[in-house]
Structures are given as C-alpha cells and as structure tokens.
Image (cartoon, rainbow, N blue to C red; front, side, top):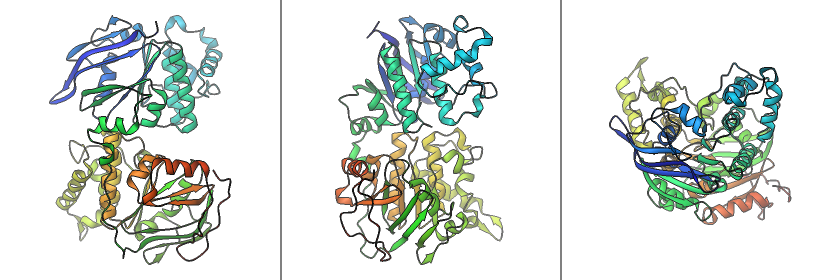
Length: 519
C-alpha cells in the first residue's frame, strides 16, 4: 500500500575492526517514494545498503522488508521478500548475452521458455525506457559503461521488487542517459515501488528524490524534504560546516602576476577560434553546455590532439602542441576527467601512481632516493587528506574521491606552471570535493595558473576567479569574479549572448563575435 514502509532499519550499528561504520542508524523507505541517501565516502552508505540486502550482518539493530524481519546473512531471503539492488560495479556475466543475463536474474516462475528469451528480453528492455532493446544478443561485456549501468537497473527490475536499491546509478551516465534513468525511477515510484537512491550528485538527488537522508561518519544527521531543501543546506549537513566556508578563499591578487598561458586564435576539431590569457596564481573556469568543444580544447592544450590553427604560448615558449611530452616539458599538465582509464594505474600503489612522472626529481646518478620520494608523497597525502592505509595500497582499493586526489597529487609533484583540470570532482563525494578545491587553490597561490572545466555552476562560482563561457566552440562571454554566482553562469550558458564589449585576444588580435543565437 502507498505510504507503507517497504524497508525499515532500526538502531543499526556495524563495526569493522576498530572502525565504526554505522552507529545507531534508523532509516525507512516508503512504498511509492524515492528516498535518497547521501554522505561522504566512508559515511556508511554502502554498509547500510549491504545490511539492507542481507550481505552484511549488523552488530545491532533490525531490518524489515515489507514488514517482515530479515534474518542475518540472508540475501536470498531479502530478494524473496521483495528487495532488489542495482550494483555500481556491475553483476553481469560479461561473456553471456544480455538476454541470458536477464533470464538468470528473473525468478524461475517469471522466466519465459528458454527459446523465447530474446523476444522476452527485448520487450522488457523496451518497457524500461532505457534504450537497450537493440542489444539482447550482445555479450554484456560489449556494452559501454553507461549501457552496463542502465542494464544493472533493468536486471534489478526484472524481479518486480517492492524496494529497489540504486548505488551510484549515474556515475557513468551522460545527461540524456540520466534523464532516461530518472524517467524509469519515477515510473517505479508511481507504480508503488520504494526506491533508495544513493548518489554524490546533489542536483540529481534533489531533482528525483522525495526525501533525503544524510549520513556523516556513520551517524544519522537527519531526513529532509527534497522539495524544500537546497544543495548548500545538504552540503552543510554532509560536511559539518557552512557551504560558503567550504570553498577556499584566494590570496590577495598580485598586480605584477604575469601570464603563464596565452591562447590566441586556437582552432581544432569542434572548437575555435579561441583566445584568452591565464595569469599566474589564477583559477579560470570553462563553462558551457556539453558538446560545445570543451574536451577538444583541453585535449589540444595538453598536446593530445594537434591544433588546426592558432598560437599557444606557455611562459616565454611557443608550443607546437604536437605531443603531450612537449606540453609537460613546458609545464602544462592535464588532470583528465576519466581517472581510471587516463590518469591512474589501478593495480599499483599510491606512491608509484604519484611519482611515476617525477622520478628524476628523486634520483641521483641513476639511483632512486626512496626516503626523499616517500617524504614528498607523504606531504601530498597530508595536503590532500588522502585516506589510505599505506603508500603502497593499490589505488583500485581506494574510494573514488581518494583516487582522484592521487591523480591531483601527481600533477602537483611535477610542479607545473599550468594545470588543466577537466571535471576534477566528477564522481567524487562532497567532502573530497572540498579537499580538492583547497588543494587547487593552494597550488594557484603558489603561482600556478589553473584552467578548470566543470559542468557544475556552483563549483565554478565557488572556486574560480573568473569564468569563460563556451558555446559552439568559441568563448562567448567572460564573467568576472565580482559577478560570479550560480545564476549568472547558468544564464550565460542558456542565453548564449554575444560579446557586449570590444573584447580582444591577449596578443592584440580582435576576437570574432559569437553568433547571437548561440546556446
């Protein structure tokens, strides 16, 4: 029945060795509601989901699904009582076709005859509005990361659950895929299913949830109405300090700070011409709707893709941008958005991932000075507040936020004059986000120029000294620091106005006026 609890957890506590993961936490999800669960990495969200699904035993407390108590260590009973979970890391057999994975996930009494499973799978996937109905014969391992994540949701819904647990369901999804997932989530809610939605992306949480519960350090911080709660209020509950105080304040500007990067009429695939200057000690944001040339611009500046035209000067050296080696040698470092595939070696430790590009700094006559290496890495671990049991811990076992911090630490150790930070907090919990903001500001205060591309206008307004808005591959507006706020950035992106002032490139070449109808 509507408004009846489909998942109840009372006084739940769990300790792993000396670490208390949960302390006396109570939580409930009603039929026909989307109940979000938010908090930093390590706040206890995953442990709470593990206890609800029967995979983790609580030390204290009770769990009821549909009003029926859940015995300890009983995931099969949890499924039988009507609980389903879509796993963040996937639970499919990659070598098996999509249709077989769906068939195995369905309860035996709901499976079709084996020879008809393809038609059955296509109909189910079409019903879920997840654009996967074309793939019943494809091996699950051939799906993209986004398709796999959507498929996890589809598999969970095959069981027709009373309560659905979604653990970071949008991590690999783009805007259109998030919209499709949210349509499915809202359809579940309207059909009477209770949905527990775990995510770091607070705007998405407030968009889709009815209520939001916050955990911090394994303790319950409160449950809030999503319709009347703002993102800054949630951040304050999550990190334990006011939202405004979480952003680091810049050092006093220096009048004699020179340009560390000058871009003049740069053109490449899907962008250009682009002209701007980045000063020492400055953080400049790049804003704009997706698909307006931002990733291509960053790839070009990092030497990954050669430009078609234009000039780039770093310090007093003009770059050809034909290789990443040249860019790094000139002091330009890219912090890529896809840390697992482009920035880190997951099976190697924190120390190795941090120093791999800076080993010459710690070597003398070809011999590595290990004590100096460890000392430098320890300083960065303290600065970035990287949570790791040791410097030799493989980064694949760290949380997403700590993995990103290791990626940031590597760029810091190289001491570049320019850092290109592409979505530096993507998939990162709120607390780690502010640690990264603080570290970026510390590096800029030391004299580096930092270019930040972010899809989060609150992030840009909180950390940047000014913001450049891109549309159709060109810079259409510059928002100075004294005008920076979320509304101002969003308005510039949505309206896409042309340049109102006679803006000129830093090398004296007139910048082309953007189309008046740019968006």
